Image (cartoon, rainbow, N blue to C red; front, side, top):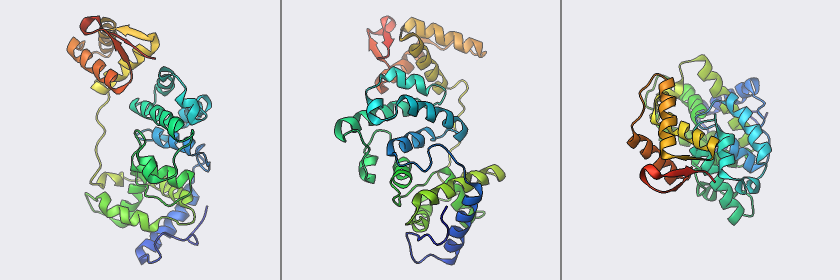
Length: 295
């Protein structure tokens, strides 16, 4: 772990910024987490970890990341795999759209980039499902290039240290500070330090990131449309295909076990149509005669 001797991207830091940098390096070294996707130079492996970590706890991601990388060790391996297998491996991690986006990214990179990830921020941002934080993470963690990487733990540190007592702190205020204080020599180590210190702060204090203008409370999963989507995906994956009536019966039974009434057919049809449109399923036939299957 490097220290204050590491150059920052800005050479005119304020005293407050200098103090922040020193504290983050110190706390990062004390709190460092030796996670399996750290200190590796494989951009694909880093991207998989970054996508899995979106709205998902580190402890859960550790198990899934290692299993995923064993089965799909390269972009080409993921690109050539059946979508159904990718979705099966993702089950239990949540937010299945991420798996489809990752599969599409692999297919695009295999087809247009020789089975490798692009090395520029602009090209990374053009990939399916890749936003600023994911692209910035690949740039910093895989390519060791200074980049804007602003996610919940990073927000936590900057809001806690530089905006005590402030509510509705915007990313527009944070981004210049993140850019200025980023290490020019070791962006990977710098962001590891921010992530680990931020995680520690969230465990010890009322989460400072809730004072972000962009903080949104995650919607309840139990009984939600999102839960019903996940159950329909599970059913079709298990059987490889299911009729509309089978989906209705399976979801009715699932809801009954949870003490909830059976959803009406139009809701099931609407969810199934969304899943077809998004690429989870293919469909043959229409209406009550529809058959849904995975390829």
